[in-house]
Amino acid sequence: MTYTYKYPRAALTVDCVVFGLDDEDLKVLLIQRALEPFAGMWALPGGFVQVEETLQDAALRELREETGVTRVYLEQLYTFGAVDRDPRERVVSVAYYALVKMSDHRVQAATDAASAAWFAASDLPSLAFDHEEILEAALARLKGKVVYQPIGFELLPRKFTLTQLQRMYEIILERPLDKRNFRKKILAMDLLEELDEVERDVAHRAARLYRFDERKYRRHVKAGFNFQI
Amino acid sequence: MTYTYKYPRAALTVDCVVFGLDDEDLKVLLIQRALEPFAGMWALPGGFVQVEETLQDAALRELREETGVTRVYLEQLYTFGAVDRDPRERVVSVAYYALVKMSDHRVQAATDAASAAWFAASDLPSLAFDHEEILEAALARLKGKVVYQPIGFELLPRKFTLTQLQRMYEIILERPLDKRNFRKKILAMDLLEELDEVERDVAHRAARLYRFDERKYRRHVKAGFNFQI
DNA sequence: CCAAAAGTGTTCACGGTACACCCATGC
DNA sequence: GCATGGGTGTACCGTGAACACTTTTGG
Image (tube, rainbow over all chains, first blue to last red):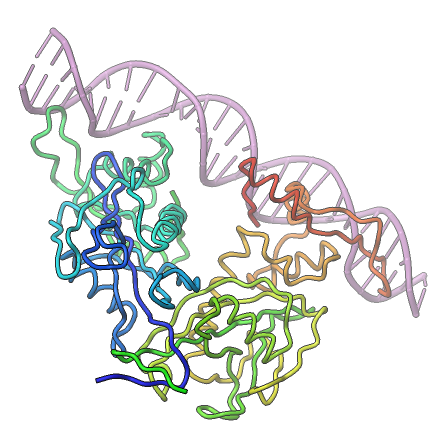
């Protein structure tokens, strides 16, 4: 079965920049390509958009198929359309970025990916296609957006300490934050629910755990509140 | 001549939200469709991406062909991929928004547009396809971006008064600004070149003219400066 | 008791905001 | 001379930034 058109058509793909966080680094999930072109090279997970699925659905499907990642925050980033970005033929790619709670996910390679692995965003291998450019754009977007939208919580476990929260911002923004000022500010926003629970298994005083309260946030937004780190 | 593929492919288009400004309103440039579907309806200028041109080139070409608009600030907005957004078949559209100096341009309808005209952004006709959604997104982007990037100058003539500049922000942001504070702030940024020239043909004291100094702006950015209204 | 991180307040400087009158010009 | 917008300064307040010590806990 084939499909015929009057004019030539570009192929359409999605690519996903998946961010995760551990104690030291912002991480990016890459797959090792099993097929040509660029077989053996690291690349962003992604693939062809089917003709009866939305772009976002395609991105979620590819993530699931290639890495096993499912519950994520997903946002469209930019569409890359350089004429020669794919050596085979004209391919336009709609890039997304995703934020995942790394602690929740064990990634698994699948289908057309030889393997999937996390890399520190500050120490990446060279990538197939124009994926380095896409990654740059995703990093810039994340850095820009994390300070005025409460998306950073998507990278943390549901229950977290204020130190973990501060560390997340320090890692993403690549600058130190003042502990007392940070706590004052974040608590003054009244977005966190203080839990009756503390860290476990630490070799020092255990820190209080908090949870981001989405409903509170939405109520404050309606009242004109603006999140700001 | 036809083109045949193994899997069905979505068609790829670009659509442009073109913003202009006059004394009272933010304007949007629309075309009246000459062809089905939605013949006779108002729509965003746009059309199919050719297989050997970039997305931005396609946007510029369609703008030129359909409206005669040429020198513009153009930025990619978002890619719209709902499965049924075009009644004919699957069409994915990469939306751009443009800022033009309305005083410089006389728009002209052309090719497959029956006519082209400016509409106040606050009083638009209903639009073909999902173009109302695209326009919403463009307005939101413009409002969000104009306060932290000096893109508003693209809507004004090269030489402008501080009152015109303030008015532009008031119109886009839909809120009044304090005259003295606005002037203090904008002049303190040291981005404007004060010209030895004043308004002409006004029935009152003529205002000083200024010009945005792009080179100064770039130098300040390198030194860590952040534009902010 | 020692190591490690949790937790907590105050002071100061700066920038944002509010606000009203005189001036220049064209008709 | 009058109508119209051009142009200017000051006082107050709130927010951001700098900064160090005590407490708790596990080993």
